[in-house]
Image 1 (cartoon, rainbow, N blue to C red):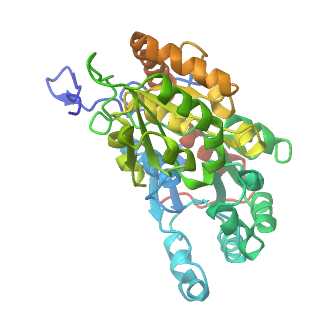
Image 2: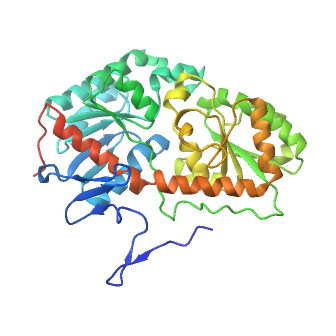
Image 3: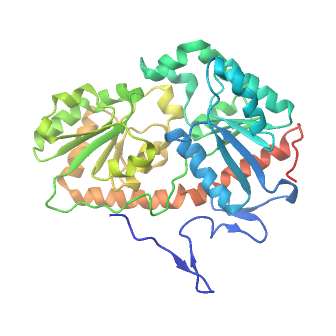
Length: 406
């Protein structure tokens, strides 16, 4: 059951929408009061509204967090006209339909690309720049370190057509780079100090999406689980032994595997295993909601340490789970023992699980603190204003003039 929608009565008796920008956005003066910057950002009239088009997919996590949520919240303010166009087609059809994309971006000031890993994408970028557009490359992964993942569908795709060599060319030629990880931003700033922007993945806190109240009753079995795709299959090696040991020690505990099912799942008591098929990101809340302890294992390599976001962590918390994770990537910003429990080795995974399973109140306490942290620092109404600030800076600071909206 979803939570009741919270609204706030205004002076005239009407109801305001929950969350959004009501506390930070001044619609009369067109300014943000950025919670993370602690100062208002003035918007020159010549830049209002900023017209942004993002070329990318909107049906999976990257599109949802890097396009869908920013577009929804920025469009509500009127400061940005943020629209989506499907990914540039591949193969021979690309040359025939590329003109449609040139037409689509004609009225935009900023063009955001999710991938610049093939010659056509580079060609498209250069053509947009010749038209006076600001071109941004956005990513939520450290794609130059993708081979750390080992053999998988992602590395196979990356090996096709010399993508690994072409991708850095796009980063070099673009006007701005937006990334979801602070460590990745710091890594890229060593090469491009003036065009990298850290835009963390925002949490869409609209109450019709999440049921973030911890829901378990004392007499129901506790469930541990993992949500991931096959690209992170090697990470599952970290929890294979601990999960098998915990399932033996706690015969009432269930295990839920969502998306990719690593080989060790077959070795668990099958009557206590719940499997869920891969699903679009909008189904994640329901898939995670019956998990009490969400596991986020990550091997210690560059793809994870520099580029990994904490998206699975905040999705789990927003669905009512407490989180145990490897202390890598954006998770290092969480507070060990308060908002999360860190597991640094196999024995640490076992010990952390025992602490929570022996004391379910610990699960609820960690979840409460994590929820407070996420709503205070990662909700979209706090984070998304960074998108507008980054786009504004790019328009003001770029040497190539961009036409202002009529």
